[in-house]
Amino acid sequence: MNIALFEDAGFLNLLPLVWLRACFELRCGRDLLVDKVRQHAGGRVARLIVRPQLSELVHDRTPLDPAVDGENWCLLNARTMFVGDALLPRMGSAWVLNGSLVAVVLPPDEARALDESLVRDEGRLEKWLGNFRVERPPAEVRLISYPWDLILANGPELMRQCRDGGVQAGRVYAGAHLLNSAAIHVGEGAVVKPGAVLDAEAGPIHIESDVLIQPNAVLEGPCFVGARSIVRPGAVLRAGTTIGPVCKVGGEIESSVVQGHSNKQHDGFLGHSFVASWVNLGADTVTSDLKNTYGSIRVSINGVGVESGQHFLGAIVGDHTKTGIGTILPTGGVLGICANVFTHSGVPKFVPSFAWLTEQGLTRYRIEKALDIARTVMARRDVELTPGEEALLRACEQEAFEVEAAGWAGRV
Image (cartoon, rainbow, N blue to C red):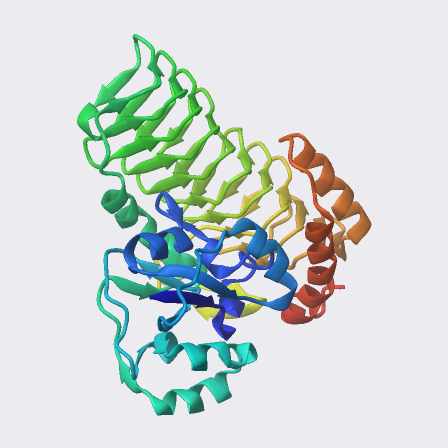
């Protein structure tokens, strides 16, 4: 079956993580949501229906499978997460979960004639779904509604996915300690230095190619370290942690997801958090992930409070954001994209995108300066900020100011 991944209005609740990427490009476990679709949905991802400003970049990053003429099309929500093989819905049926369309199958002519704006218009979409028999998706199919859904799912997803242990294709030095080596995968070109401890007794550890695990680092499974990443001396990666590709990490990290191309090189604690790309967390940046009352944590999504229902939840950090030395992030704190936090006077629960927060207060971050720094940071990893990425950042600067208006109210 041909599959068309579509973004609905639910993307708004995944901001700031999806300002610069489609929902299906988010990471959980050892891969992206789109990778799970390709592995488990039994179809070909042949069409992407995303926000117009993302379309060109996302199509460049997500190669399409060739569509088969005459075959039916499954419209599949970009927030869908497969945790196992599942048959797509039958013709005439629609999967709906918590009021959101997950998937529906259309004949080829209806799929070709589909108005792509329909899927982001909740009123029109609800009316359109009246033409179908509504069903609940199988247990192997979930819908990511908020950023903390990815954090909560990460540990179990690592347990499910990292089943290729017993591999030591890289170099493991004498003096490194591998506990339960049958559950540890060390990829080609990876290096594990003396004194490092890889403890897979409670869950698997997967180290991708060309990773460097430096002396005295401790990794507790389930844990995943993406290609070309560096785990600094003395770092502690605790259970439920995913480090994406080309990251540098140190200090203590627990039950967190780092999308990729981000740094947390120094001491400090990152717990139950999601960190996007091109982020730098300064030395001794600390997240609080548990309230003193042990109660449910309230999170500001786009500056508006939402009850997460979670008792452990750290920070949600958008792309290209930076924190200064000794920054303390509040429980359930949210930092938008291209935000800069350099204050010891207390970081608020929500820092808007393109904000500059210092002891003097909150001001808007100049887009030209933001672009200059993005170019510099990316060049350090031999990556160029493309004209398309620059255009997207410029578009997001104004749109984010409007979407996150509640976070700016009374503060500038």
